[in-house]
Length: 117
Image 1 (cartoon, rainbow, N blue to C red):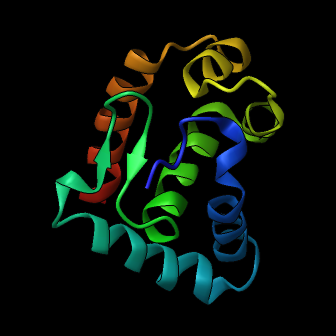
Image 2: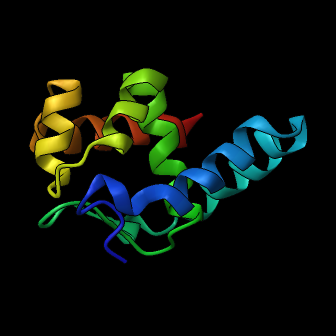
């Protein structure tokens, strides 16, 4: 699934992320932990070829949005999601100052640390 070829395509994934992180303590701990664990055995769940692509929109999308919130904060993630630019890379750079290649490096480093916790 082409999750983030444009920022406007991510609403269902963001809804899942919010449902997990803002509902109950069990969802914040157990469910999000399960999402992280399910993504761990399969490093190919995300691809950065021509945008960002994930295998499972909800599980992997929620993990990706967790990283984005922790990295950029709520305001920048919201600005990115509201962007009318049809290119996720351009919207990412405009709202965060980070190019897609740098985002990929940060994600791969940050996600690796998250999985070790």
